[in-house]
Image 1: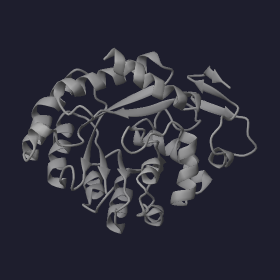
Image 2: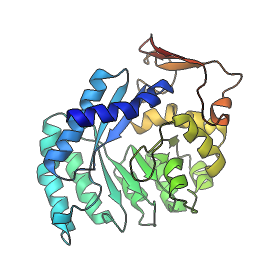
Image 3: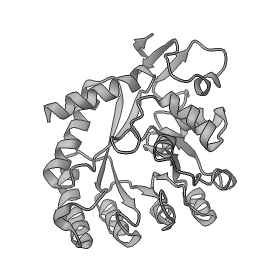
Length: 293
């Protein structure tokens, strides 16, 4: 656990220096109760030790462990009856996520996870429509999910459902780039149906080793054709909503926490313009300066 804490901290520090003051970390790389507990405990400890608000999401339904080969329903039952109640009971979980895809779990299996999360009073999220269209994003909308991620293969009906439910679309240009994907998320449909679009690093060892959120702004503009204004809202206002933090984070308003970055730039679009390097800034968290550079 100490080794995991130290390695995670090294990955987080570049994001914090880049101005991040609130973030989400997901489990899902252990796939058994002990490993998921360890990851979620480390997430909690990072939030206690670093100058950032850290939300903890249980992604036990990320992939099928080898010992459950050919028994996906049994693994889902284990998540619902054993893992989630235990981890939630220990106060380690802020939200529950799953991967709805032909190489992971079906919509019916994901729905069982959502029902279990709802019974525990936990909000849900979903990895959906990354590689194919299973209408997982519509399923997420039916359960009023905080967010649905990826969405390259979502349909017009999926976008409509998400807009009506208020579920945030989390776009992940880093994974899109690294995997050399060619299917773009349906940005125009998301706009038509008023779906809030967040931008995230999706920092993970397999598909998006992205240590710069500013680089994700540039990629969202160049790859997904978002405007600089949309990307800025995507890492502030809409990102806070995707984390369930919209009442306290994401914008400068009376009654919200004083978390912001004072950038020494000519205009906001520069955040999405510069590739690499470091821009002069002051990072303020809870009304106190935590970084200047």
